[in-house]
Image (tube, rainbow, N blue to C red; front, side, top):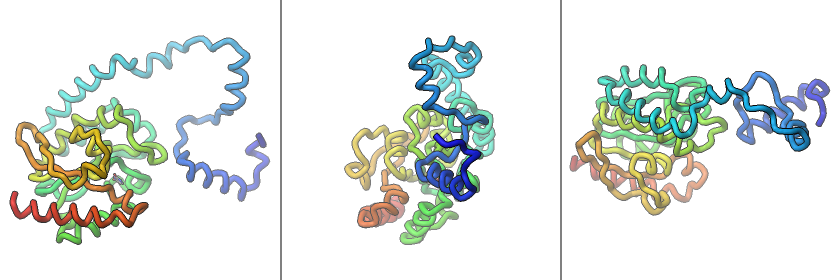
Length: 264
Ligand code: URA
């Protein structure tokens, strides 16, 4: 491998662009590691002794349910959205916080009758601190406008409020860790209708295991702290940007949402 110091500024810029395209856009350590050299030497050398400090820093997997339970109790105590936001800022139970720039809590009107819950902040949201402000967000705005809605008439959040590195899909452990906060956020907003944007949101909030193409557009029940409200999964705008021919399904679902809003 060539030494970084030998690379021209143009080659370094190309390398950084390549890393970003591959999803490597967050530095998780101050020092670079040559993993090739490490794996070669560790194949020969005996395994390094277990480092006590590192082991103590991360909770063992068996501790996670207890951590989640404690967190759930804390989230349920939040009496206002500001209080919930402050509790999330103090929450250390989701590893995504370590690599994200900031908490991306919500956007829109907390008094709204409709709440949209997406997947996770992307790079633009992480920079600006509001959900759905990038290209997917612009498409979401157009989708809302198509049925006479805008951000003053809906409330928008995500199942995880921190950006996963490289925009990967949040893991069930991450969405599960944040779930008590998301559920409390829905209780505090108290929408009449819940819309899950994309499969991770649908799986996390509605417990649906089958794929989103099968489940989208169907009304399901969501238990909003003892009150059952209608909930529906829709295709995520980021997916629609990649599969524009599927916008017809989103249009069907939006019309169904508009119809439902006349009933509730
Ligand atoms: N995608 C999401 O699911 N949420 C955002 O906030 C932005 C993009």
